[in-house]
Image (cartoon, rainbow, N blue to C red; front, side):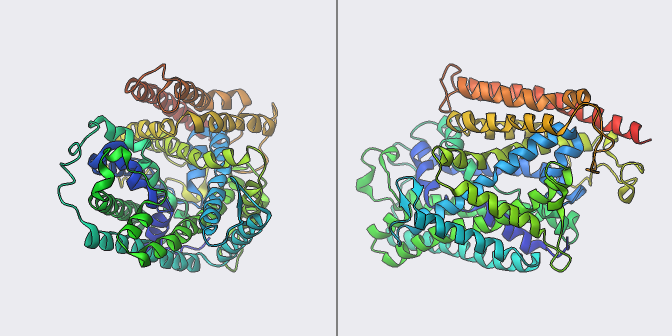
Length: 532
């Protein structure tokens, strides 16, 4: 792969992956949940995501690789963890398919007949497949061209929200909104925490990890990656805060008789624009509703290709898909197989769309696995000995870009676990068992006594029992999250009331984290001894 990406290209990738069509709705849902105090929720989400980002920044700066978020768990915790995380990432291709499906829903505003209920019609499926082919074709050439096109899309995705904020504020500003209609926190400050998940705030800021998967194509990653990731989060957060302010201060007074919970729109900013006679803005917003998820899908196709490349490097899928085209520096075989997978996810099978809609959330497991990986790598065992990888022999365990990793890593693991838990039982009851099905994939790949057929970078092949012991923490972790999700208050049974459900998740996550780090250090130590 070619190291052609700089700061602005990476920042555009991060920003475009964060900001999809969700910005059109998040301000309304957040206000319904917390009122004006939703502003605090946005700031909290930015801080929490920034905390998780610091861990991934350290990994990207220390060990830059194409599809690094798939590679780091395997290198730190062995092949069972690498397979389960890789399997979840492979399933999360459904998230890209969901973005393309969302584009079809918005396009149906202009071209009726693309949807039949909740599934694509034959015409809708044909158009969605054509769009998938187009996005794949735009990723076919050098990464520098991809970055330039994405930067242009990102500029438009910034310009439309800015125009929305300025137009709404200039046309319909109502003062006193932070104190009227129940005050700043009409539903209590606890609602600020509820809004993080229930209001969709966390998931609106999610996606900041995208530049890390391009770390193997970055010029001077130790200097460029950290600032690009943080800049992407910062730009998105400022945009969301401005949109939240615009929404709070421009909702017509007569709609607030029942408080913020009683205000509901099918298209919040679009309808506000029509109420204020800003028809040009409404038209622009509907156009952006197609382009914003299109930009996210464009980046999603590129990220999926890096993940497939990394999965082939891990040995989870055939090494055939690891091939990089010499002329363009692009993993074209990975792009082709992902094209096929996305089309399969788009097919309107019964119940299939439910699975597609939740699998994008499972990329959140990468955050937890990365927190463990950075804690393992920062130990003495995390160095790279001569016998394991000669071109990186003697390399320091980590770059040291982020101070305080001793406490940031476990806290990041807890935050990542809460992100998964807050997805809600209606999602996790489908997603977590599907991820656990990766255990069957691992057992199918590993016959007792079999020898490794590929060099995946994780050292000599170990007995099956040893791999199971090293990776047992992830299986227990997924089972515990499933049980707690059913017991908890996020669309669960409610047997474990709030806030004790989230506190229990935090306590379990902290215990699992130290178990996982100890297992990872043991795995690396055994690999070093075997290599010696």
